[in-house]
Length: 165
Image (cartoon, rainbow, N blue to C red; front, top):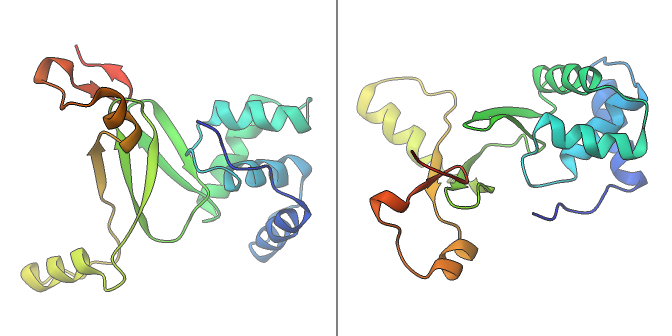
């Protein structure tokens, strides 16, 4: 997986503004951590973020990265998502769903219907007031389908990039 390019000065200015609006201190590690997560579409783990941040700030600790990721997620600047491999972070905070490739483990963003299709149907059929929803899709991505060329049998199915027992 090749992440998007590292952010330039404009991205850092947007990051600083987002932190200021929420009243968070503008520490260098926090700005870099937010930039790293927002500059990639691979839904990184804390260890991925830590490795990227250390390139720009060698003295940062893993605990600092974890603490700041949790703070940024609590403030709504990032989204946390748990999966079989652990906690992952998403810099895209607008409403969207996810597709996880069971072969390579890559997570893709899936746009939600602009008219709120699922939420509207659930509300109409149940009477619930649906404020938010999350849908997870699982299967094989286009690249993995092209590589394999066939549908896996039950014994060959993979879960999050690892063979099922």
